Image: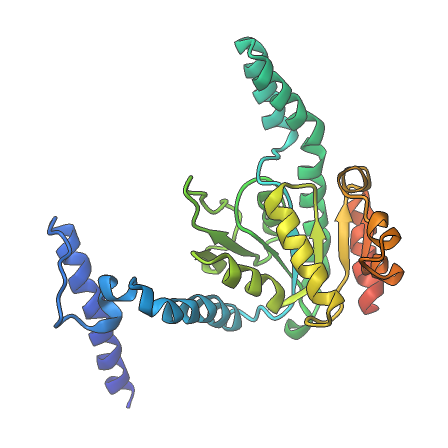
Length: 290
């Protein structure tokens, strides 16, 4: 039986190896009715097979995380543009040498916000340290969008502690690459934003949103909406950087205008330090302190 399985798997792999060899030889890909359907990119990329691609983007990260015992995640969102203090300072020096006002203003903003990188990294360390002492079914794993900035910082914090961590990257026109701190076996690349966001929520036991742009806002409000509408179980939703979030969004206006209920403001918490963020998650789930 085992030999039969190996033969079958080899035949499936050979279909892709043949296609790769064809590409390596410099031959342009032509339509080929005889090519196995799953190994036929022209067929798989048709509009009519989009549903199959949805299913594949659903299954691949799900099965891989199951294989590695990833059942509970703490999702960290935030700006891809923030850098650590050293890199931010270097960028400011370069900008000041250039004398370009726009570059200088951008670099000064990076220096001003560099502490968020360090705080995201420290928060992830708290999660990883806690999980070291947990049985496999209770471990919490850091999960991010897998890119640079705050995402990198959180993956880096888990990596500092030797913990597995997840990156759910997205293929973008400017070709964003996975940061080097994501565990390679848990570094995934998506085409569809919808499937990526679904994976953020499937295993999430908490969400920590650092200052960010449109992408961060999109992800944050999707989670809040799912919890508000009871399409997802309640989880701690933590907004890190109270000054940033309160300047950016006056959520009290929604209550004043009757577009949300007063109790909806209890769906999230403002914090300004990693320990408080972690304490909110501990309290929500009554986790032991380690």
